[in-house]
Image 1 (cartoon, rainbow, N blue to C red):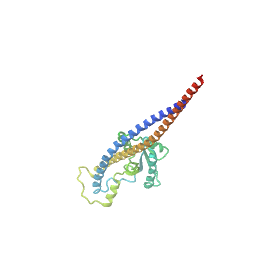
Image 2: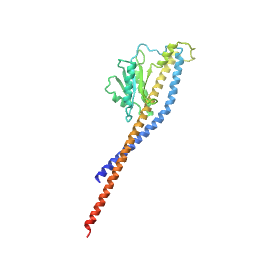
Image 3: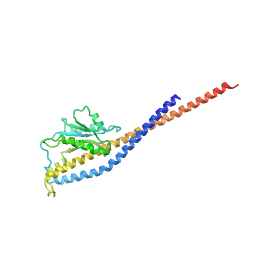
Image 4: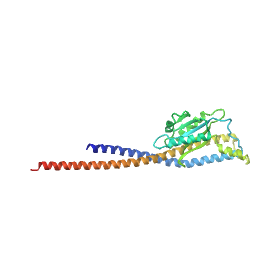
Length: 284
């Protein structure tokens, strides 16, 4: 009876763990649906801003050109919570590759977004800031505000720092990297190579004021899209990770149930043997 009780206690604990895992998986799945619905709208917003900036830069190719060489900074977006496998390790590996490609031999400052990522980079001397990340879609705007405030505090006489961002891209299921600041860096390079050949767009603002406004909107739009993409990838990884864990737990539950049934059968057999022996000793 003692052995079966121990097995039943373990079985009860495993069932409780299984229920918790299922609940966590369900919540993450709900978040993936919410975030996926937002990403398409965010893509359209970014493309609209890039289109307007491209029209302006086709005429004013030297707008937003930085004064001097700004300091380099990397924003690294990882996970706020666990149960997502090697999510953060992949981001860190991609960061190393991106730094080697764009700042070889340099030691740029890093802004680590996400508690789990920050813990893994805790001993990295390049980390200048550790920011809390988003666990659910409703927290993305708060995280966005923290990043923008941190970038604003690093602005100097040369303008904002040259910023690149590294994050997990759910579309490719691998980390991605892109230039964030100076804004429209690729568009500016193409515009300077092509020269000013188009008539200027009709605007109510000056070219400088309009481009500064577009650059601010672009920063918020791209960062929000990056944060949502990273959070979507995190929850997708968590769903897959928890599903695998659930299968393993279910297998253990079935094994313990079989063991409990086997022990119960042994107890019944022992009880029958006791009854038979008791009857044999009492026979005249």
